[in-house]
Image (cartoon, rainbow, N blue to C red):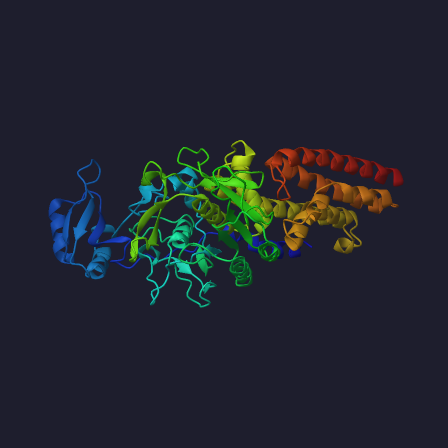
Length: 557
């Protein structure tokens, strides 16, 4: 049993294992300054020795800085392309402690894209803190169901200038029925830019989950209009072709069952669906956002207040930056996109506003959370809601305003919690087996370990079941309660079973107390303020069951 636990837990250790060292970039790449070398000379080196060193190795050397204590750090200049040869000579010279290409450094978590300073929306959700944790969206595919994306160069479209490094997977054009879902409107490219515009390339603006993969699905024509059949087709296509998240910055005031069935299909296949709530200026939430399978996103402006155009209602799950351009572009959401208003192709950086701009922020943060190892869509949905900055009333903001920093922090905590619980259970199981073997040496480890088995099942059973059935299953409510040990207690007829029930109840007690103490709600769409008291009640019940079963085990023997 201990061996099985170790083997099954090894994949969980991966995030904590030391990362393999990355090879240094070749000289002349973007991470270095061409023609420049940093040299750390031996302490006390004289100016004459420095000049001799420069002559021997074929470069110009000068003191890097006149600051006190910096006299031995030298900056070297060589002809571009000669860096590698000169470095080889320097590293062999007895006067040199270290020699490296002149690397470029940047402020941690801050992209070098020149327009990033105008992206107030990313800073307002704590993007830099999320990036600093290593969350980039890598390995997550987000389907953008929209007007298409300017992602390839062909007869109908050119790739938008700041998408050259963005990852794309095969999509489809449901309007023209071909495999080239290019954008002839500009809306879809802007939405895709918020999610994964090429970042840290010294060009334009940044994307929030910049290493995510975009699946472009065109369902809206050049006027921004499309049919429910095309949208339903695209939803099913995304679910069948590997998308983990769908973003739909589109809507209708009327529900239709064709689209609803497609959303249900995608949700059952494990896709998180994020939708714009609508721009009805305080009117009701549109569809598909209002479907329970979807996350409905309202919009806030740079001040954090509800944007004037945003729809509201009980269906709103979350608010995110949507901008307000009434007082200029600086209040809008700035991304690279294409524009055809003048009748000609224009590729530039435009500030838009709308819940259409808010929705991709949530989709991107969901991708950040998934890239940290939390992949169950119902669990990611809960992380988004729990991580939001609380704001009232709920009909405007849902659980609150999106926080990338808090959501990624919770995702990391969920991974650590799973590992700690596994390690704790492993130690308890091994100790239990050891005690059983010592007390019954004649039978050794062949003695059936009822108590350790009960403890393991109580601690890990609920997690194993929701990992099998899915985080969103209502079975979690049963498995995270004391009902199972209570039932077993009623049926117990021997001392051995009583001890098993005791250990099972103690394991359940520890599991519930763990979740309650850390604020983990083990079921989606339940407000933590409602679920946590329920959890604590079950903690007390489980402890009571354990005490009664323990007492009865002694009465039997």
